[in-house]
Length: 525
Image (cartoon, rainbow, N blue to C red; front, side):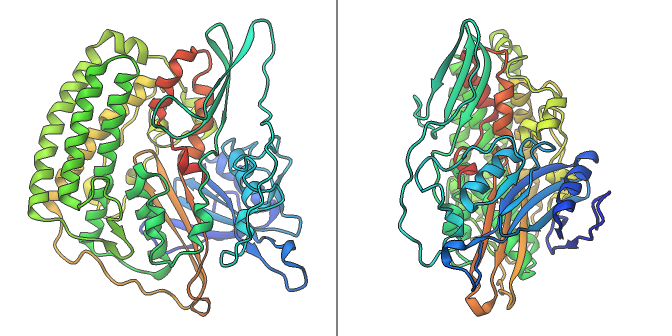
């Protein structure tokens, strides 16, 4: 397989979704980005490898071996590797794909690699918790050195000047039980002229920790990258591992995984729809959707043994089969939620005050969404028709014929409507999955390979596509995880939020922010 316009042959990786891997030169790195952009493809993820060690140099000279990028085109996902020189530099991609900028800054903080010519070279994840010449992913995971925090420095926000312009600083601690993030507004009166985000307060060292865990157990940590997407992350990790091991899960396990994923989608959308109503002082919506979400989670608890379905997906299949009581309760819950969500949709559509706040607020036009790489449900609300379940359906989605949600207006109202559409569609899928699920075992053994290998998992989570890239050492070094990159769609969508608020007023920000509902911790590993 080739990317049109790039003379590189990519090798297919064994996975239920179309994934190809190839190595490129520095010149081909840029050519590939241009070709993908020209043919309407998207950048999904960019990350650096772990360290490579030279016998001729001291341990302090260790450096990242390579830089990686993942693109999605109509044909599937292309995983590119560029081997780095001793200077650790590679060509900047942010001019072609603006979403690359923060990923490149994060790679510089974690792995000491640098995008040549990038306009923004400020640290992204390193707030001073470690020295600026210390790179966490280059350390020996078995013998980690003690951390020596660096000096705290003021973050150089971009200043907006002019008559009447002033700044409003919000966060990182907020008046609510949410994750930390700082938002710097430049405003005139109430109108927002510029918003700049400062994230990275939740850095947990997950990607380094992954290299310390047994490969067959690391799915548990993957499922804790972002708690609201535990199913999607665990599935993507297991898909990557099963790709390496050439493991074929059973049909029943595949159907159960899809059932878990759609249940997670429904739970999150119900919660967000209630919160959106609450942000415009429509407490009735919060009460009703909270009730429905609670009923849904209790049905999940009975069916899968955990309200959030944590640790339900394991390498080789799923942790346990569903029982008759769970099947009956989940089907009953589908009927009740479906009926009430349809009624609440009519309430939303007929509520003049709610519509006044939703329509044209936080708008991201389709052209801007395409330019910035807006993805997931927020992208579909701005006419970006990408949904892995529809674009490359694999078992059981190839038999379910998922109907993609979508809208063109790109505002808060559109993002709410897409959630309504996806709730109704996911409930249809859940009912079919429960009624038509094939019989058989739910888990098979996973045999680790003798040689080093790589694999990739790609799953359409409720927020957007989750990608896990996994590199495994051979049996001679105990099948150690040499690198595991876990990518959240929030990487692409956080920068778009800065544009969505422009020309709106500060008081609309909580509503606009909630309509995206991005993960702080998912992009801060």
